[in-house]
Length: 544
Length: 46
Image (cartoon, rainbow over the protein chains, first blue to last red):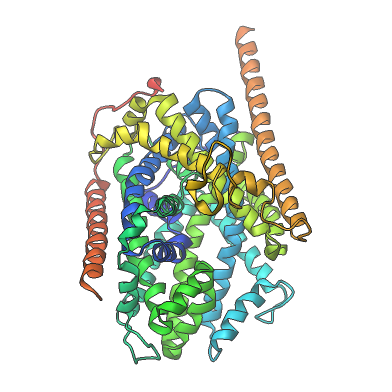
């Protein structure tokens, strides 16, 4: 039975859902850490350049190609890519978008469940009276499935099941009734919680509530420019990576959401608004919460040390302790607001990441949105299991590397090539500027044709053959030693001891991911065969 | 907070905030208007 075409109820709902998809943990936990590690105030220069040359063009590509696909009844990355590339093999290339989105969904949903638990623990005062060490230890105990931190057996696992079920329930309600409604509630709440914490961070005074520095000391540290960092290519790569992740590019999420647009709906103004909403959240709110507060209590040296383990350490091991210094009422409010805003950022992102698979199954097998949502939920559940059970065995990192990093860049690269060089930038430009409510500078047409695809190809090649310690002076015609994180080195387990007990888990995770890719290809193959047969039957009936 | 850091922070955050507000203003201006433009592209082109 053919499904009724879904659509967005309002433009503001669409923008908030798109922005919600982009605004995620990276805005609050990754951006400030990246800025500190890559030149402070000077980092913003490569960051903004990447935003204009990579982020905005790719956002426009995903919006316009999604809309194009939707006009022809296609709502999932494989079908949209085939429409763009005009050959059936592009449908298999489009499977990379599905592959990355469902893998990210599996571990992102797990992280969302940590945040949900921390939100409740903050509300119920679990952290009251705990020392800094006890709170840090709480995080390790929480991730250990055999230990219950709340007294409820398997609470970590139950929290994950609850979050996944919540996501699937919302998705089963459809685009307007589920995703759009949730975005309209979650996004304003996220801003309110964020602004409350920014005000607290800005007004933090040395000597009050145990703080040793003013909140402005952290802001000063974050925004002090180290201009010499601009000559370092790694800083530019880090900025490009941050822009890429923060806008949720390369996973088919934006494409799928945009495919529910009507022909006469604008995409130029809506896409710019959603991208700038993300920048507001990242550069204004994200940079003004954890760094000023943590430096206010610990000082710069200790925070630099803490940021070496990434944003999660600072967010989960440190922030609950710092909020505790604000007294019972404010610590509860601040803890709830902090983890609440992360939860709202997380849930709106997870919905956008799961919907491409829901749309793919729905279209491929003529299933309802509800049925596709439940089946996708089961997929995500089984995909997440190894990640949860063998979290500390390197499985999480494998998922993140192949699904959450490499597949994203690969898919975005193909998208840019298909849009600019196969469909043609002239037609693509018509899609972007057609029915537009704002004038898009023509300079972007040149960027779309030459700069963005070239940048993505270069980033991908550099990821394949990255030299040791990112030292590009090592490159030589006689060969060079690869960095442990280069794709080829990663495949060969470079840097790992041959007797490392984690290798078996890592290889197991890779086989699991490969099986997932084969399953996606199988669904595409079945879909092609079924449609061919239908056309054949229709033609035969017309002939007779 | 030193002057240079303050200027960079204010200019960058101010610009992003300003552009975001401008874009939302445009969105709400158009929100309830029907798009009365002629057809911008035809499906046949694709």
